[in-house]
Image 1 (cartoon, rainbow, N blue to C red):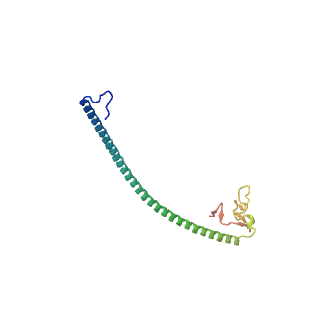
Image 2: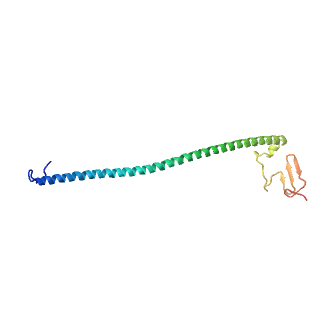
Length: 166
């Protein structure tokens, strides 16, 4: 043990005894401080561990919810795809029916229409000239006479714009 400055070595024994006791007290206080720090670290560790357990529980609950929602979303996706395919098949059927009707109608129209009707514009691809009054050139609204490609025809039984005669 080293002697402090200003103290004589070999002096009275009471000084050495006091110094030894002081050193023992300091060592015991340092040991208590070290133990206290260990207790504080353990308390902080236990608190952190408890918080971790709570957060882990929340995480597990959230993962369970995500799993349930994923299954529900998958069911809804399958139902949507089934409905979409059903609608697509109906659209294809209706489109096929529409195409059949158009070809049937065009075939009848071409069979019954004279050749010069194409020139006069009976079909939508050919523009029809409109008079200054805004009427179709083959229509006379006052007398209800319609002039067609085969000649003028008087519509009997009509008085005014499309009302039956009394």
